[in-house]
Image 1 (tube, rainbow, N blue to C red):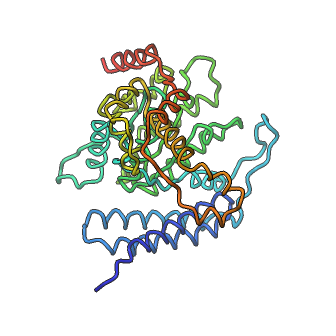
Image 2: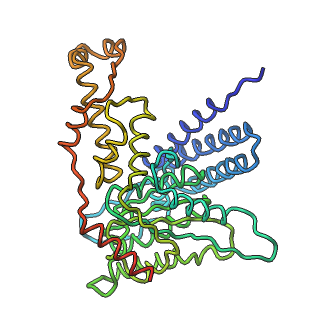
Image 3: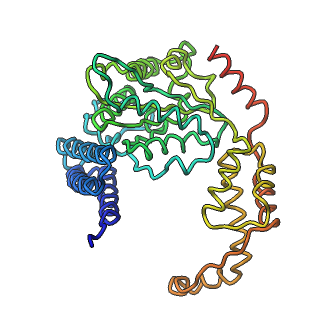
Length: 395
């Protein structure tokens, strides 16, 4: 009977991928190249383990993307040195392209989040799947069908915008560039536009890709309000990338997802490039139930309080806050059920490894501790402003 080695191969792939990313962060380009090629070969072996053509094709494309990353690193110095400058002073010498390649490759993350890890937001998930499906599937001869390439997620903090982006990349087996504003904005003259250009160049090379730009409003302050020449160049560069000027004649697919809690601060020209704007609201009762089940019942915990009661008590809470409620209640339960655990910690790791943590059903007092500590941060005025902005921009 043949032995299924797919789990072992995938584990080796993840380890090689992790080593490659760590090498890039250290500036060890050649080491990173070797590990990316190892990861590519393991991904090809992983692809051979399935009969489904679409899944096999996706995995083979991922292997090709990893090989391209290795080729990129081959052209970089053996040790990439970050330039040193005095704070607040512009660089006197231009930074080599390899510096930006290293920074951009370090933004790639292997997303383990899947659609099932997110409670609710089913319509949003369907919109993303439709965009990706239209982009990747073969088109009828002589027919052009354009797909959304730019999506804006907006809504109150903690509602799942980052999770949605991670699930998009994880579920669709796309290269995930997780970009925080601090990774792109630079106090040094002229660097931000170069980093943006390098980011999109890498994403096209490793297509299909998802670029997630968090705190998006900070990248694009409204034009004309005391902006500098550098800020204007950032906006111009981003406009060109969102327009997809560099992808008109190739089949690469890059999905840009911008996320913001303050959409009314966005530059109008940038906003117009987002074909799909998705309001990610506070979870409704059905979504709250799904979030509670993900963090409680699906993780093996039992509760003396009916889930329906918890759904009612978490009205007005964001998804992140509901997760914190569950974590705090579980932490209180484990303290109650394991009173001697602190003494075992003092005895060392050997004693801890021989001890099995006891669990009990979560009770009213566990949740009361959580609700006493965690309160909803989003007020009705902020919710109303998001809704009014959405209606205004959609009109």
